Image (cartoon, rainbow, N blue to C red; front, side, top):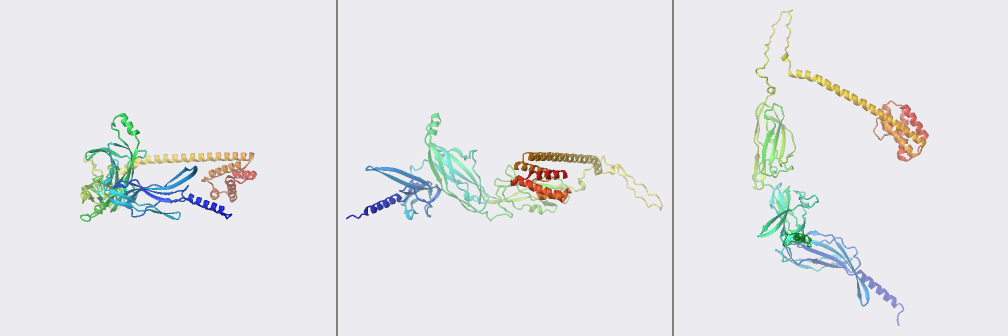
Length: 595
């Protein structure tokens, strides 16, 4: 006997099975684009999370690779989603099939040769632990046949060991065989980790921002190549061991025509389909060693050589107390405005016949040299000498220290009396004998003093000549200032009269038209008249208006009325308050009569 409720239970079971089939079964897969590669070849590692459902529910935004993999991650692409929907017809019945996936892509480079394994990767998703299958790879020292197009890419340092401040050139070099034509090169070199410890130059670019590569034809083992290179200058600031990270180079290229000089061959090279190749250069290590202690001269500050030092002065026959400008010029390929100089002023401070002062910064020249300037004042007359200046440096090419020495400078310092211009011997004035009066008898008249024209000095003659011109110049300046003042007063009176006329017109408009807008315009004209009348700076405040009324001798009642009208005007301009016209107009007209 059938149970009456059995069909309902069967329907419930079918609905549950359908819901479970719609949820799908998630899976995790790991794939690579090659299983045999060399140490300098990139490997594309792709991880796919898929599910037989219309859409994945909350997929992870990233898939971090586990630690300990024998690879170095060069680049990671953002996750990409994919949705597939198709209809399958079987035995006359249509079935909709859905599949959704999220792909996580990595570009890695192997770190060691031999057989290596990408272990099983795991992911916790929707309460389940998903696992991928392990992948076995074979890494060789040389490139596998057929897995590269003959292009090579490498980074090269001008020196692997250096000292602080010594310039190191990092060269990115790509060799392209003649059967390929490169169309676009996109390097990737992350030097952000070295910004704090190095001074890094930026590559030269076009106005459109494209990097300018150096191109030349070279022979490698008798085979012609196109050499494309780019140089980056690195200047270390402090000792340490630094890693230049892995660099990638994406090359878009086409096949070269057998007759590149012909027109059709030229067009075929551009119309042929483009291919892309990603090249990788392994990481490099730069050792920045401290300067050696053996043979280090006293006062060494880290300057790199070889250096040349020259000293010069602006005059060689100064007077006692006259300032002398001493200029020290340093020349060297490794000098920069950030170079730290040794305390070279000690040679100058030890001088007893000079006073040294000034601490000017380094002045860079167009030729790359650096200038230092000091001011000296001679204290004693006679022959004096500025000693040689010694600047120690370190030559990284020779690996030893050196000292750049300037030539000493000889001066002939004159006394202050000797600095006066001497008169010619033929034109020397006659000597007037000095008469010593003898003691006179009591009551005798004293002899009168006589004066002569040559006794007048040049300063008196100069003042007598310049005094009329000085008085004339002062008179002209005084007259000009009076004219400017008069013009300013006339301009102020004119502007005040115009402001009052504008205020009267606004009051007439307010009386005829009325309304809040007319009241606001009248209030604005009243405020302009006030700051012109009392020489105030806009906007006019009640405190400034009270102080101006007190300075002009106005009564307290008038000052209070001015402040009340200012408050009403502010309310009319900014507060949107309706102001009755008759009181406003009467008060303004009364105050105009008072002012």
